[in-house]
Image 1 (spheres, each protein chain N blue to C red):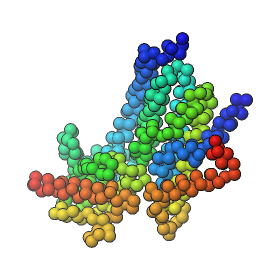
Image 2: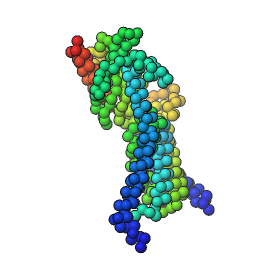
Image 3: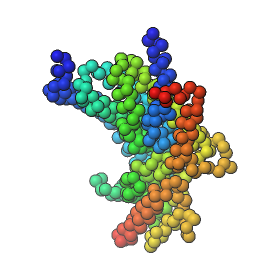
Length: 202
Length: 204
């Protein structure tokens, strides 16, 4: 009797509905509880990304203050790609702009800082990526990102080139050729487009 | 009696019937996240927790679940638990969440969890199933740590991110690439199979 009852479509459907309600409620509660924490972390990651690419030092305690003091958002709140001006002692020191592009497994998003004359990279940072952990995912390591700081910009061509190619100025990641190459293309394009846009505006 | 049973279950899961080395389950992530020890450890802990708790829940409701839809129910519970782990990592250990990336979500597909649910939790009491899940998770973690220890040491010259071989060490890049994982796993399975008495189960 009991066995027959359990085999019925009604029992199975009812069972799944009850289970669904329980699990969804559980996940919903967890989501609500952790939402503020996750949002705060994500916001701070964006701020850290902007500050890193602007080449401005900060500590985890004063990050928001430093950000408020030195960066002015110049793009609209709902703009897809944000742009900022770097301000120091009331003087405009350069720009930070957001980039997005396709890498090996998915979208890469981050920030690039350039100086006031658009002649030099101040720094780059990667905020979001879905590259292979331990391989392509190493684009977020400091040694990779730090290589770009201080490089002179030449927006007339693809000026970022991996060594040992002729004119190479940065190192790719061993074992992550495709991700490395995607990053080179993304950076070259983003910088070229930003420079052209700024020159067009003046 | 109960403790004797628990002991046996623990020993089976960790050693004699190790999920990776003997059952050849969970190979995908054993190959993928073992280039750094820290990644392996966190992945191991996450999988251990998911396996243990999914076994506990599945065993607890095993008499209520209609047999013909049990797989859906199991997958459902496992998926929910993996989301819990994913959200907790995002909120309280964000750097690791970023490092492990898509692999956290892929815990759902780890055969060890479903394997334990089907092979053990389905027919055993909740607490024992929980211990079984725990044991298999620990067995998996130990193998991952063994593989990643060698891979990280030779590939980066470090252990848990701390450089131990010095700056003069020439990194074996091969070890941190996919082939390094295959070599290590193969060698471990070979060593394990040549242990005295390991063949016992193989003849069945």
